[in-house]
Image 1 (cartoon, rainbow, N blue to C red):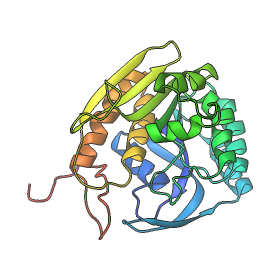
Image 2: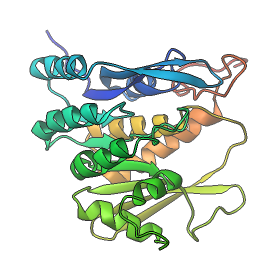
Image 3: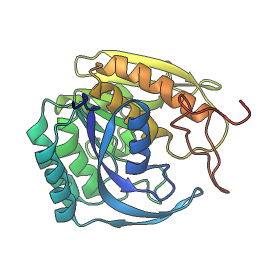
Length: 277
């Protein structure tokens, strides 16, 4: 007798040999939530726990063929889009996910660990805004990433509010925009941080969290991966964010140092005994 399968999540992202970022990180996060990853690689990182030295793009045709191959074989409960390496990849992925409009789509396209944060190419940023963000159930950006994207539509020399920048994205079709590292009064307050979820109807959900000391790699990837997993289980965006943020905080609180570099989130902290226990 066949058991009910775990929810399947299709994830596009980089391949990180450390396992802190990209599809390897998603495999662990999804598994910790009882989901199974179908992983499609967009680029190969040359990296260690301290830094990413460079990345090498995967051929767009190969990437797209692999995605379509698994999609023709298996049903998916959610899709996550991580870092992409070219506008050709963005176009191919946008075409693929357009056939699955009923499936939650989490878009977390920038990696702060990359040498240029994945944002140096204006064409890639523009393609994310124009063809991926409009299809997103949730678009996850840090405040600096949102500001960089907003340069595409802001008039030179004119400042814009966080709310106005988010409204530009939701007006184009994005259902929710999750801005990380915000606060209730618009600036960092001591050791408190917040993640803010905006919807297209001007609704705002703010969830505070305590800032943890130390240098981490993969915190944002963990949050977006957990968000995708929670939505694959049928949670709405607000409920999923609360659960995903709680999980991410725990993964950071129990982070591990594998080498001489940054701390890596412990994505299995809920199910594996800690040292000394």
